Image 1 (cartoon, helix red, strand yellow):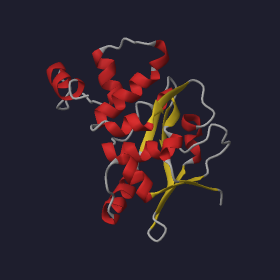
Image 2: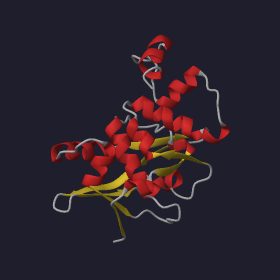
Image 3: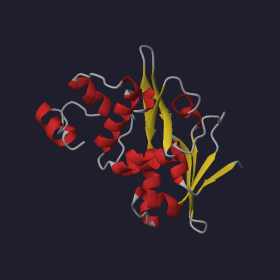
Image 4: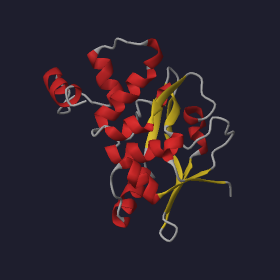
Length: 195
């Protein structure tokens, strides 16, 4: 097996993902799941031809995330993440991709190991165009919508600004019609102002 053990996440604070990955369309993610996912996305080397098993020790990840992950919570997190997917749609097809093949926590070594699904290559390897962001920024944000809004803004960072219609922004953030936040007033108060 090809391992990469990371002991200093500061060296790997930058992540690059395909533009279509930034909205995380598909599964709903909670803030911890997004943090955990992007911690491992930062471990992918731009020169990687295929995914390796990426490893991060527990103490380093907890320190960087500023939260503790008890074994019971890790089990719940893994069960949720293993079922997460990304959805990509074009004029001809709707495609659904599993994100992870495996998630492992070694209780003795206190190391997390993940293996991304090989089908995630178009989203995470050899990217053009891509979105560049910073793990430290993602970790600072508390809500799922704040994190997703950051990813959307990161996509347009080099342009300096962008315009988006409210209904398109709601779609990008995964807010469905009829949800609590689907009226503009609630969206502005609970999502935009919070973010």
